[in-house]
Length: 331
Image 1: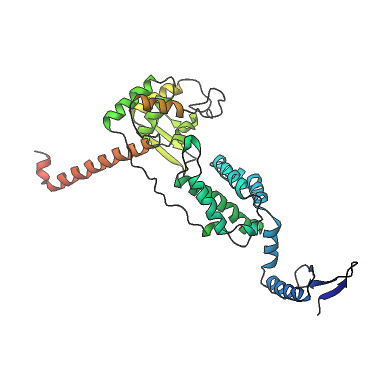
Image 2: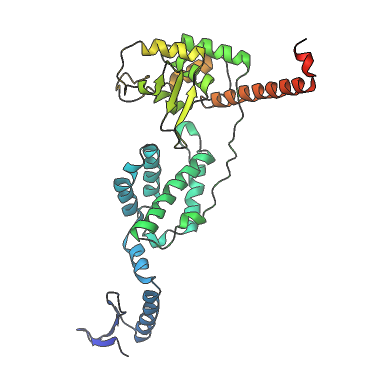
């Protein structure tokens, strides 16, 4: 058969070397012990090359997931500074679990097994990961495959997209009652952490996230206008936040200390270029205030509940005004 050479080896055995040549592509050669298998391989390979599948398949067989992850960490991750630390952690987990697999062996069924492990694996304090956290792990790996597909040509599809994400059943609506708020603020004022009270006041008055508060810099605060400007938010948008009396006064006191424009408002005592970690102080304050099942992020829910009440009052007030005759307003 044209393109298949019969060869007699030194030990007397017979092998068949198949050659595939398709215009516009490099030649492909492979040796077999069976003429039938050699013919089938030659025919299938010619079809795959003509349809543009063969060399992509070879690429996915040549590389492991570990190679892909390390290349991504080196060349892509530096361009994602906002969440690079978390993505790096996610990818190291995937590398540990699946790094030794060649890319063509990463199938949806294998990924589902690892998704279930992510959901059941015990982490800090004997707890499991939340569904939302598992979704982020899956998304981090999915982006690696997207880059391999669109930019590197290492794979022909993204198998992660075929894996169902766990339902986000961990939604919370916990917020502070008025009495709990008073108790919490008193506990924060008693804390040995000098920045805990102002951080909680900022959260309660602005609805800012923990990370947004702790990463605040002097340049983000405009005292004269009474505005905080966040340039790197979770959603990637710039956001302006108005300040009311209590946080504005506290920020004026904090900024009275000489700070460079790029200096953090709440720096770590060990490294002023990194934000202070107030989580332990927060947990102690919550315990001192006798508040149960309450996280720092729940302060955002508390702000949302206040705004909902204010909006409800505003609507009712407008309804009452609209129901009155014009003359009644001036009586």
